[in-house]
Length: 385
Image (cartoon, rainbow, N blue to C red; front, top):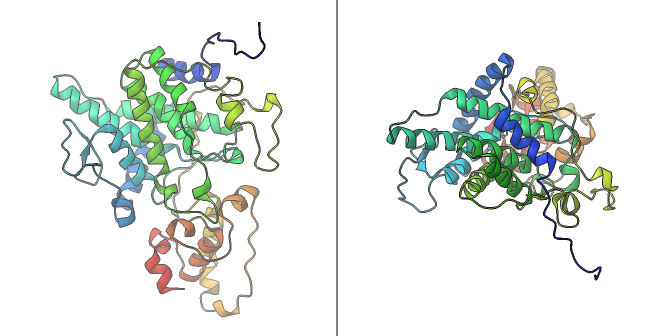
């Protein structure tokens, strides 16, 4: 037989995909700390979304794609009159949640904001509840929402613990898509085979580059990228529930799988990693660890790696506010992740550029004594050049 042929032996689903599916189907959450934290996380996330509605650059993205569209049992977008199909509602909710860079954070080999998954979770929960009530069935409960949150946090966070996607140029919203796909498919009633299909499609789907988070291209896409990811998850779940076949070797397929195509190079030298380094590494099994240890942004709507610098600037403000002209330079000592993401010099082009600049996020509270979302807007920047 010629050697120029592919062996067409269809594999079983990658074990990493099976582990996610078995977790959302079988795991029972018994951690009171996780339940309590999830309640606080839900309140915090909704607050972030409602605050974002003050900003026209955010609200302009919201609403139906076709004006005047009426959707039976449409999912509601908090703080707005919109009732949308669950795919667009997930986009809108995810957009407002993430817009101000104020919702929760997870720091590991990969960072991210697991409450981004609430875009899909809330949209699907509201849609299903209204549909159930119309058919004489019980709606979903807040406990169902909290359970989905804990699981989505866990999937995104555990995958992030030992695996850096940013180092190969991929944006962390990839993990939002995977986590949201798993939990919303389960909420929608998917069986194991349908869940396997949905999650496999999330891995082979087009993945966002980090271009829009870094100089010189930082821009507002980073504020709606998570909404886009959680919305795509709802769409993929729906596709799988319609009986679409899955892709068993989505991760491991030689040459064509996620590992070989997207996880096999480093940004530093673009040389192939050794094969054993192309697969995900895991520190722990899925449980409720991530929700129990999630980080909240209590003080500042700013990229998390800058929080300490912002706090130091606020603390120093009383000592320097009347001596600003005496400042010769400001030295910030930080770590590789902060330098790679938010250290920049030169003109700052837009609000998203400013809230990803540690120099700007330090200077503003040093001068004004605080850092709020309005400080990133063009109006403030133009008034204080």
